Each structure stands twice: as C-alpha cells, then as structure tokens.
Image (cartoon, rainbow, N blue to C red; front, side, top):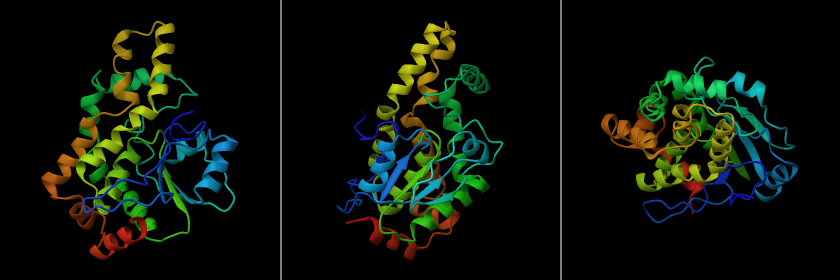
Length: 266
C-alpha cells in the first residue's frame, strides 16, 4: 500500500501540514488532491467518508473522460463538475490509468509531441493560465472553496498531476506557500505514480516497443520540475505573484484570499 494510505487511489493525498511563509500550516482533512476515483476500493471509499469526512468532489475532467471512468456515488457527498479544458483538448489530458494500458494512444501522443514530451509539456502548461475555459474552471474551483463545509473537499483530474498540479499551485500560492514548497508538493506525484511508470515500462519492454517511445514514458506518465516551473515563470513574468494572477485573471479579491486563509490555515 502506498504511503497515501489508500489501496487503489495511488495519487490521492491530503494537503494538510504544508507550511506557509508566515509559519502557519494547512489544516488536515480539508483539502485533498487526487486522480480519478473510478477504481477506488470499498476500503478507499470508506476511508474518504469516515476518516476524511468527505463532503465535496470537484471533477476537473471533461465529458469524455467522465463517461469512460465515472466517479463512484458516495452517500452525502456533493459531486460538482469543474472542467478545466475543452472536450477536444487532449494532449495535456494525456494521463492514462495503470489498469488500461494503451500503447497505441501513448505512441500517438509521443509522436504529436515530436518525441520531446518534456519540451512540449513545458510549452503547454502555461496555457492552463490563459485558456478561457481553464480560467473559468479554476475560478469556479476557488469560488467553491470559499464556501466552507464541515469536512473535506477532494478535487481531481485523471491522474492528478497536470490540471490538479496547476490548481494546487494556485490554492497553495493564495494560502501563502512558497514556490519551493509548491514545487516539492508537485514532485511528490512521482513517488505516487512510480508504480504506474514501472508497470508501463515493463509491459512495453515485453511487447518489444521501440525504445524511442519507452524513453519518453517518464516525461509522459510522471512530472518534472520544469513543468511547474514553466507556470511559475509565466506568472512571475506577467503578473508578479500568484495572488496578482488570481486577482487579475480569476477575479479573486483580497477579501477572498483572507477568507481562504481563515478557512484552511491554522
């Protein structure tokens, strides 16, 4: 079992305990980042309900993704669609699940990225800050978090690394977490998804997949510091701070920021 404490949810983890610049910490069992919940075991579902008092699920995926792997219905939990990308935008939603290896799809994505997944992803990530649908989605995400519930809120995309990675950057930045700690949390995804990468690599080797594709797997299936750094660089160059970006592009006010800190910090 992963250190996350879940059986089938490999990249589901609590943001609790992360420290801010002014010495406060994020409350435990309030904010949970995750990949899809479709494969959650009964143990996982009960853990979310009983240990984390889960009250809301925010789904960042589009209709096609939801149709293929819908979230389980959990009693007493509000399910809210919060799509970050258009239906036809598929490259940055390249995550696949360990339960459904699709090498033809992976090869297609790698070819689209001209066998340089890292550079292509570096160029794509900042688009999540500027795309009209992404802005609307992340604004909705923050607005929902401003409405407190007596329990936890879980937000997720497919693998819990790209759209969730940028969403986590935004909420951590608004709570006053440093860039260094934001990057550290982002890179923890590699630990939680290492099993998936090893599984893909093993299966691809067994099927004699060309090594030029396998060499791109780590950039495709996991995360790199360069990805999230590209987002931070864009924010710092164009807005100065994450707070300024949120105010200018998402319509978040200083009062909203103070309320988020009141709700989620201790």
